[in-house]
Image (cartoon, rainbow over all chains, first blue to last red; front, top):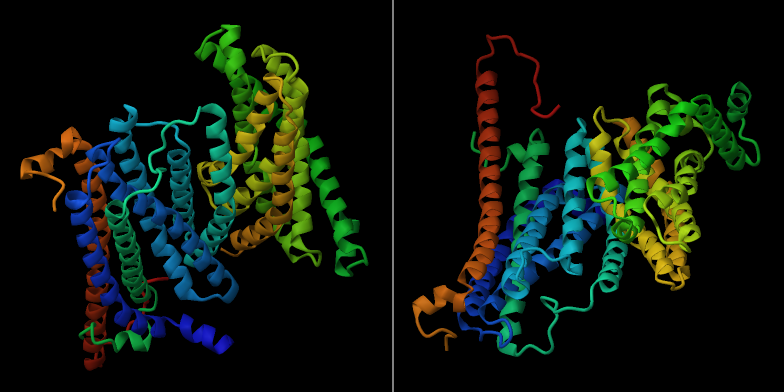
Length: 246
Length: 238
Length: 75
C-alpha cells in the first residue's frame, strides 16, 4: 500500500505519466472549447427572456463550477501532502491556486457583465456573486500566505493548512450567504437558475464544462511538470531527460 | 512558573488538564499586568462606533437601521486587530517553543491561549456592546440578544482568528496578511450574529440564529485547536 | 442552423454585443494567458537547466581550473 502511494507520488513517475496524459487533455480541451464555443455563440437559440445576453452562461457557469472545484482539488492535494508528505501533491496545490483565482475572477467578471442587461447594474449583492467574491479572497489568502514564507517547505505546509481550513468553511460560507440573501432580498430573478432548458441550450453548456475541466487538467499537468523541473533540477533523472540537451 | 516547569519533566496523570489551567492562569496574569493594553480593543470599538454617526448621519432613525451591522462589524474588527498579540509575545520570548516541546498535547495549550484571548477581548467587547448600542439608537428589546450573540460569536472569532495568527506569527510583517486570511472565514459568524439582532428587532425569535452561532462555536471548538497547533508547529519550524 | 441571420447580427448579439463579447473575450484572454504563461515558464526552465548542464560539462572537461563549490539554484 505505502509502496504504491509513494510510487505514484514520486516526481519521476508523475513526470512520465503526465507526459503521456497531457496531450490528450489538450486535445479534448481544444475540441470541446472550440465546439462548445461555436455552438454556444452562434448555433444555440436565444433565450426568450434574456435574448442574446444569455450566451454569457456558456463562460460564466463553467468558470464558476471550476472555481469551486479547483479549491476542493487544491485542498485534497494539500491533505495528501500533509498526510503522506508527497511533494507532487504540494506542487499541484501550488499551481492550482493561481488558476483557481483566475477562474473565480472570470466568473465574477462575466457575472457582473451579465448583470447589466438583466438587472440594469454592474453589481448586485446576489448570493452567488457574493460567495464568488469571498472565494476570490480565500484564493488570494492562500497565494499570499505561500509567498510570505522565505522557506518553501514552511510556505507549502502553511498554505496546505489554510486550504483545508478554507474548504471546511466554503459550504458554511455558501449557506450563510444564501441565508443572508433570502433574508434581505425578496427572491429576485437569479442569473443561472432556470426551469428546464432545451437540449440545444444545455448541451453546449455541458461541452463547455467538459472543455474547461480538461483545460484545467492539462494546465495542471503542464505546470506540475515545470514545478518538478524547478524543484528537482539537481536529480540525475531530470538531467537525463531528452528535453534538456547539454 | 518554575514549579510547573519542573513538573513538566515528569508528566503527571492529569497532565493535559493541569497544563491547560497553568497556561490559562499564566495568560490571565500576564494580561492583568498589562491592564492598559487590554483596554485597547474596547477603546478601538468605541472609536469606530463614534466614527459612523459622524461619517454617515446623526439621524437616529437611520442609525437604528444600520446599528446591528455596525456593532457587529466594529466588534469583529476590534477582535481582529487584537489577534496579533495572541502568540507574538510568546513567540518572541521563546515560551512558544517551550509549549511545543512540553509533553502535554499542544492543542490544550493553544485552547488555553485562545480562552485568554476571548476573556480579554471577546467578552469585554460583548459586555460593552449594549452601551455603544445606545449611542446608535439600537431599538429596545434587542440588547440582550446583541450581547448574547457577541458572546457566542466572538468565541468563534477568537478560535478561527487564532489559526490565522498562528500561521503568520513567524512572519515579520504578518499583520495585514492575517486579516486577509481570516476575514473571509468570519463571514458566517457576521451573517448569523447580525441576523440574531435583526430578528430580535423585528420581534421574531432570535433563538435559531443563536443556535447556529452555538453550532459554529462547537464546530470550531472541535477543529480549530488542531489547526492552531499544526500552524504553530509550521511557524516555528520555518 | 445558425441562430443569426447575418454576420452583423452575430456581432451585434441583439444589442447585447458589448456584454456577450466582453465576457467571452475576458474568459478567452485569461485562459490563453494561463496557457502561454505555462508554456513560457516551461521553456525558460528547460533553457536554464540545459545551460547549467552545459556549464557543468565544460567545467568537468577543463580540470586545470580549481573546482568551485557546487551551488544549487534553490537554496
